[in-house]
Length: 28
Image (cartoon, rainbow, N blue to C red):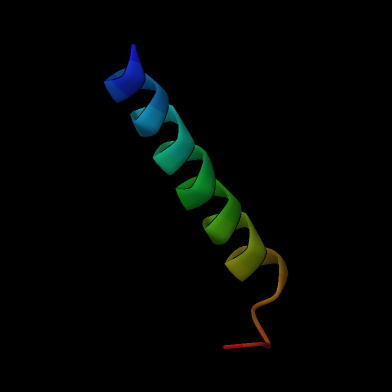
């Protein structure tokens, strides 16, 4: 359970970072 939780957390953080980059392409 812990491992799957970490994977979900990492995947969420990764998606959030991608969304931020796509929404803020001017800031790099």
